[in-house]
Length: 208
Image (cartoon, rainbow, N blue to C red; front, side, top):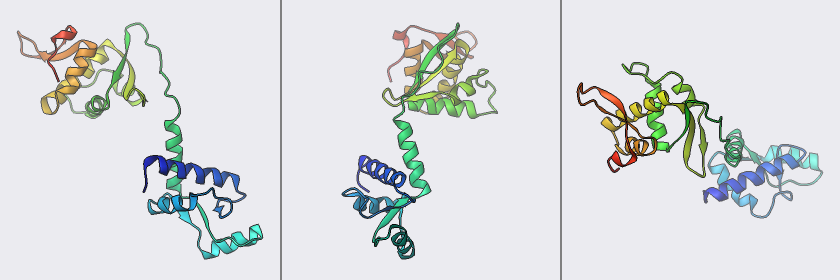
């Protein structure tokens, strides 16, 4: 149905109309111009419902006038409206880094890889202590398109290991970008060939 903005505008109008009404229905005569057509599109998505003949008759008695059209949001429509409104709330910066911590920002693809890493209980080298909780409580900035976390150096190295696993089995981009931004990457130790966290300069990473 229509564009995303048209859908959100219709949800807002119907939600506002419900709150202004004495009942849960927005009826003809109370609906803004164009709302009826927009609601028809919401109905096709299961986000709104139209009143049947019996309900319109009850509303006609309640309002002491004929009601030929009435609509309201479904529970799914109310959820969509609540979610849409939550997106407009500014994302808090989160806790300030304490001593030994740094603020880390991850792109969505990086965060997806890190979430997968922290969810695997059978790993020989599991996530650093507290990393899973930091990932769970991370905040998202829509304007920056970044997930924001505050991590210890141990947790940052653990993120690098998770992205190293992702690099071996998928894309190299996420690990390379993290290495450029936070100067840590997992690579085989020259002596033991054991994968080890290495600190490096920003110029030492390979291109995406």
